[in-house]
Length: 546
Image (cartoon, rainbow, N blue to C red; front, side, top):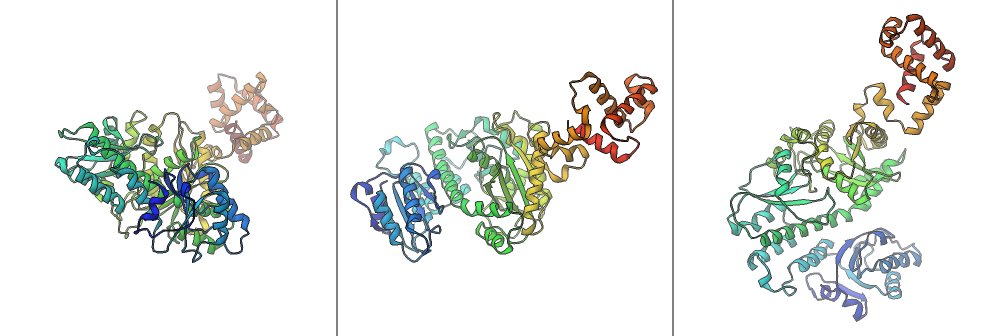
């Protein structure tokens, strides 16, 4: 599809503000919607860019528009489609900037949605019969036509899958995520638990091979139906288009999510901007909320896929994710919306959560995806913040199994009752994330899990732990000295036996007088009195921080 083709579509009612014939003849590779002031790093060559111009105001200098268009030019964008709704018209300074930089500019009237443009482009790319002869398709032409129409209408994946295999007698068929979440199933397919679904992935067809390990979808046809492999690949291609459309809509929502997380990171955000940011993200203005932080060491997109996939195991919960300024990806998750009208398959949701506990048993050898949140009843396991964290912990082993090269660590804060509590919940989640990194193997740690001194200290940054250990132990912190190592061993055993001289001597095979001598040396070198409880706690903490 070319830029000029969009102008010929009466249903879109686009107007050309500037663009020479060679620019209008450019082929469109994709669509990106953005309202970032400098969007260059999020664009791919050949894409058309949809913008509501929220980033521009009448008070802005010409340089603002010039900087935006220059970013499109550097990224190789095919054209800019500017919405008229925000300002009532497309500003002249933007027209001039597009003329200077050689970017075709089309205006989008208020009655034309960006989604209509996006779906038109990708539907044409998938279903344009002039690109390939009909003989090259395995799916019947009428089925391809219907699927193309359903894609354009934004039909839910379950309906899409059912119609895709209806001409085969509607055999049992699934679309599954990489962590065993059922995204869609036909009416003849029974509900699968997470562990059952992950076992199905080994014989399933990847929908989008270019997706990250956590963003993979799989098409699985069961039963005895004999289907040509080429036909399965074409059905998978339909779901690849569906998935790409979902990702584009998520990308368009990233600007509000980043703004919300930036406010949450601030210590004392004003109430009004915080409430507005929650509304912009489609989240309620009332709690409870859960804040989850993830760090994988992978690139930003992969990390966002991993966290998003884990959170989609929570039926009925709304959430947004964004990159934090200090690294890592965070999510703000609202409580389950039990009254919302969704198209989720509640039977599938029940099957998913019935099998969450068995994910841990499947272990790292289980096959390890993405989707949308669904509805949840009042009894859903994820219906409360605490329940949500419990579900996420059950999903974590399947998340780990998606990619052996990536280590997904997570931290969850205590429930935030109000928006004002979100910053504290984020601080707690980061602390819990640090503790998770010190645990054995990648896991999700909640701040509520930190119920021992050792667990509490594990959340401290490594340099803080080291500094405390050095100052509390004094000369004994230098354990390269054999004498100091011997004293540290005695101290550790003494504290482990609740300060009992006899039991310490027995455990170390020493005379009690020797234990008295060594503990006396510890007290002298550290300046602590081990008859005092607080000094015992200080030295115990110092040993744990080593």
